Length: 333
Ligand SMILES: NC(=O)c1ccc[n+]([C@@H]2O[C@H](COP(=O)([O-])OP(=O)(O)OC[C@H]3O[C@@H](n4cnc5c(N)ncnc54)[C@H](OP(=O)(O)O)[C@@H]3O)[C@@H](O)[C@H]2O)c1
Image 1: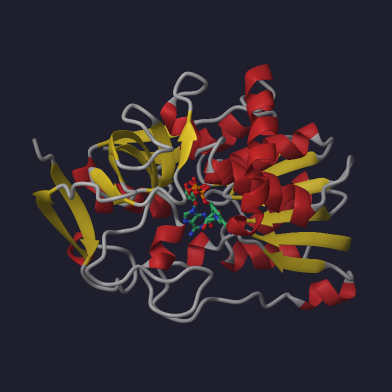
Image 2 (image 1 turned 30 degrees about the vertical axis):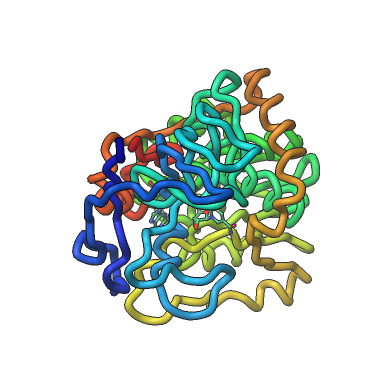
């Protein structure tokens, strides 16, 4: 029996925020696997802010999704047919499966996961690209030391919440910037952050003065824009600023807003460095093991926000930009 494959193809390059019309949503028979290929039934898809960037034309760290191509997405799924000796029906895998019901193709880039060790959505959050990003961007680029003050924007989000917990494990004072009382409360009460700044309800600079009386040693930036500029005025000598993302700028119709206060880097002999998680792929296994240990001991908590229905993809993706997601945003296929 041939399965039906519902899939989202990129139809137009979005201008500003993504709209449903930017995709074509179609149902076709699932392609059967050829020699050396596998057929995977997608179970959960990772919705990432980076998807917005992948829809733009132009040079980036990865080629853009071509018009007419299935929208790129990481996901986890179950092998249902295989013409590849390393994969058997029933195996669970993780990789770039696309926004569709079924993936057909070579399994290069797919790796096996064990559904008995963790719930499947966790392989897209703390044990997946999100956790790898938090781990390597903080530890390798941010280089936190015990006693440092670490400030994180997007702190209640998927990456930010893991960053803060790792920084606590390293003995840092951790201050999170997030939108809304509920998220800020969660950071303090559930995750043990030392301070919080609700950027939707208070002036960020005033919050930084209150929560970081000794200045900022590491700033983990997920949002860019005005918040980056505010933090730049509070950094310490030899501070490290990790440019992990700039979600406040991804839907801009005009040029990205750069930091006006960058000369603070000069004054403080500080460093601002970009990060791309894929550069660390050879070390993912080591990081996943350490994170799994922290999860098992309860030292790190992972929160997933699972939304049901492949067909809701465009609207669900927008939750990342309105802040309606609480935890790693995952689409259940
Ligand atoms: N460089 C890499 O290799 C890499 C890899 C993965 C992720 N990233 C980046 O990491 C960042 C976080 O990604 P994630 O997957 O963990 O998403 P997430 O934080 O779970 O979700 C995005 C969050 O961003 C916040 N936000 C949205 N618009 C904002 C704005 N205008 N100003 C301030 N905050 C805003 C919202 O939180 P509030 O409710 O608090 O506003 C929203 O919940 C993104 O910038 C992403 O591109 C980079």
